Image (cartoon, rainbow over all chains, first blue to last red; front, side):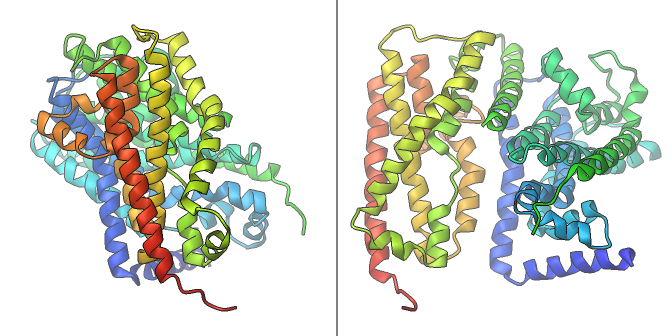
Amino acid sequence: MADTIYPRLIGARLRSQMSYRASFALDLLTQVLAQWIELIVILVLFGHVSALGGFAKNEVLLMYAFAGIAFGIADLFAGQLDNLPTYIRTGTFDVLLMRPLGTLPQIMVSDVRLRRVGRIVGAIAVMVYALAHSSIGWTPAKVALTILTPLAGAVIFGAIWVVTCSVCFWIVEGREFANAFTYGSNAFTSYPVNVYSAPLRWVMAFIVPGAFVAYYPSLALLGKQDPLGLPGWVGWTSPLVAVLAAVVAGFVWRFAVRHYRGTGS
Amino acid sequence: MLAGMTANVVFGLLRAAVLVAALRAANGEIADYGIAATNTYVWIGQGLLGFILLWGTNELAERVRSGDVVVDLYRPWHLQSALLAQDLGRGGYAFLTRLAPPMAFGMLLFPFQFPADAVQWPLFLVSAVIALVISFACRFLIDVSAFWLVDNRGLYGFWNVTSGLLCGLTVPVAFFPGWAREVLWMTPFPALMQSPIDVFLGHGDPLRTLLHQVFWAVALLAAGHLALQRAVRKVVVQGG
């Protein structure tokens, strides 16, 4: 049953959002703009410098674009988790538990906001520009890496969302705490990780595996050495890290849901 | 509250790291911002964000949409002044919980540029309060637009997306190219964030900065007052 019901639920959400076309178009445009705010920041900074952390403009733009696409896809499916505190506080989480479907997939399809596609479109445009203006020795493997990187990044971001939002089962007003890591990871991964101080890097790049969203895959694509000293093959491990992150997130979510106690009737 | 502070600190650390990396690549200084001034800029910005409440709740607009606003208009008060008073009260609390902690955090743990002249402290406070009033006036205008738009969420979203960049929260206004700087200073945006920071850092003439802020505070409050007056004339109350 589950394999037909999720596409149907998503389809219903999408149709309802497309019904007000002008409003939808404006929302979409706002999201493209939201994605490009950081692009403007990068361009403003490169008006004063020629390299950031040893990376040229187009190289930073590539990392920013990978991070943006990955975050956009994750936001589309996992952004709804921001509503979790409301479900828990009001007790409507009970409803999700009663249905014969997984709780996590139910939340994920509960409110797929199509306008968030705007972020993805905005980031893809920058990626195309950055790839066209970088000298990359293309091989079939590198083409595959280019396509897989945003997808693996989306899974990593999704896992971050699930793990940090699980905190809300203990601290109900934990949304801003979760946002520090979800939106914070988006900001973090948009720049080369060697610009950050060591403690921040350890937390956001390796414990939270932010460095595998855009930084290491970009190094592998561009054929650049890691200033932090990790070997070149690390750039190809992002899909593996993504699978690992998803498994961890699954366990954390199960553990957190077991902790949930309904508010009664 | 602690969660909000975590978010402020994380975003502050990220922003400071990127800006400092840019400074290093530019031999230590961009547009009067050295390492200490940049850290100061970041931590004041993170603090002001919650103090002036750049991104509000759109609550009044929702009340316009639902019709509950009639109750607000019914009361024997000037709605705009009453809400401004509320917001100033909120600011008093936010001063302790949102503005002071990130600033203290920056002062203790990072190179920090303290004002050269003691008079800059009270001037900064005045400037921050005017910034709060301007922020309120902008949010009020966006709220009141719901009288015409009914659903103002597009405008509200647009404000939330663009204001951070335009007011100098994400990157100092001084970093922008000359033409963009000139355009920005003709708008009220820098008065929301960049002005108090400039006063604290001693960038530019503080008196001029404050006058610029006062002008926008008065102009935007007046615009809000007029907009509400016009809006009230077209309110139709449904039902009894």
